[in-house]
Image (cartoon, rainbow, N blue to C red; front, top):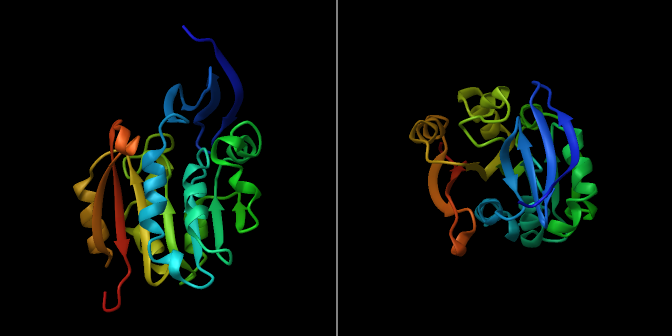
Length: 226
């Protein structure tokens, strides 16, 4: 068995214990002892950015919000797609996760936090959404395990009717809300439609063409007349 090295530990606002560990060349973030994310499987996180930034990449000075930094793979994929004049706001509620990305996790995704287009806010993404009316061309949510909250029960508020309404309000017209989920969720899809979004559902694999578990990307488009 490969030895496990504890690189960091933090407590989230709701009491969840987060740990960053390394096994050989694999990095894993644990939430209360359960694997939340691994450096060996991030294809669906990259797909989240690809789907979300399809329109924004062609705009002048696009503004994008990413909720949840994770290991930086979603941020890196978004930066690789977006133009030089883009602004990407990253809302991460756990300060230690940001520090891990500035430390041992940084090289994994090519040090995305060093990009001058990135601005990090140590805050709940729900607060960021609620205070930014019609400001973003794309909002990406990779928080917890998606609509079925895993690491923190208070994350569920992002995915209820009020959270969806906040995301809708924070988007510019023709903007897109992209939500990563560990599984299909018909009820969440219905809530998005009820929240005036035009909805697409994209099944993806954790390692994309190399397979891995099935994940889901929900896309909500804010279209005129909705």
